[in-house]
Amino acid sequence: MLITTVIICIALAIAAKDLPGLYRKHRFKDIFVYIIMLGLGTWLSILAAKLEVTPSPLVLIEIIYNPVNAFVSHILGF
Amino acid sequence: MLKKARISVRQVTVLMFLSLIGDMLLIYPTIITHIAHQDAWISSILSIPLGLIIIYVLLRVHELYPSLTLIEAINKILGPVFGSIVSCWYLFYFFMGTALNAREVGDYLTTQIFADTPLRVLLAMEVSLLVLAALVGIEAFSRVSEILLPVYVFIFCGLILALLPQIQLSNVRPVLENGLAPVAKGMVPGAGMPFAGMSIMLMVFPFVNKKAHFKKDILLASLIGGVLISLFLLLSLLVIGPFVTNYSPYISSGLTTKINELNYITRVESLVSLIWALAAYFKGVVFFYAFTFGITQLFRISNVRPFVIPAGALVFGMTILITPNVFYYIRTLVYPMAAWNYTNGLIIPLILWVVYLCKQKWKHRQNISKN
Image (cartoon, rainbow over all chains, first blue to last red; front, side, top):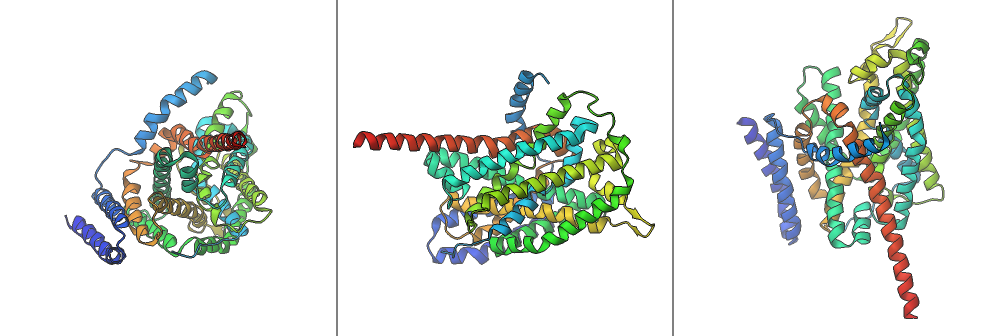
């Protein structure tokens, strides 16, 4: 619980440092991208800091490429 | 709008050399030796020409639009819709590459040197270094790589010279015991892991002050890098033997513990592990820079600086989640990762090239029919 609070506080501090500058220049697209990235980053960091077991995103790569590799090695006869 | 950063040809050559070697010295011998056993050195040497062809294709693709980075060139060649899809694919690749690279170094340090430090702390330190390097910009870190290159070469040569007396040629015999098939299989990750992963350098090349010897220097740097990787693999086979190289995840550390000169120079692991961490750090920096820079170019944002720290938070989270253990990326993920690298480093650039040529020809024909 403590580590979650700490990470959220750090994220809020980072946002408080950068967001006013972007807001003053009226860059709303930048603010949108920034908030999405920081939110996702905070969520992933909390998951990482609590050592939760989650499926790796590289499973996607395995799903895409394993049939391709099997097909190619079947053709080449290895 | 920031002033556009500029780096010299020599700096980009050093950067290419370091990021080609990168994390390969940590995991490459284990991966190739698992496939080709004692003939791993043959497949490693044979994969160098293949790798040079890949680098040449990348350089030619870069020459289509010499002042645009990869993401901008993709958007220009493929149009906004397909361009955005392919750019997102590349950004995912850069993101995963950064996280995997940092994780490899973190795993190495936490198993071999800082055994009592938690992995998260080491990874947080590494990611904060990446963020720092991306904040100071590409000019600064390419200069740092130029400064650190002599240290790197010095320690590497010292390692090789110190291990030469312990070579046993019987370790690599019998040569070609199982025929050429395992050698050919070993060439797939052998060229795919170090060379085809160099599509990141297309994000750095537009900042180079081009000279006539640019292409030659890049090819030479990748040749030397490939030869060094092969030399290291050959050394670990000759000194430690194929069996231990196959089953130990960190053969580089095992190799360093073998150093014993006159019973005086011993236990130099922490000095030598500096160079694995150094090269992998520069690869991570280039990946991370490509990731943050690619995001801002995809959304057409002019200022990169505010987005570096959120990208660092993303990367830190992903380093832990990306892989459950070491053997996931040195056994399970080898062929999918190599195929992924080939897709990004060879197939998509070739498609870009072909689409560009077709577009030029079509435009030419349209001009003729107009006249």
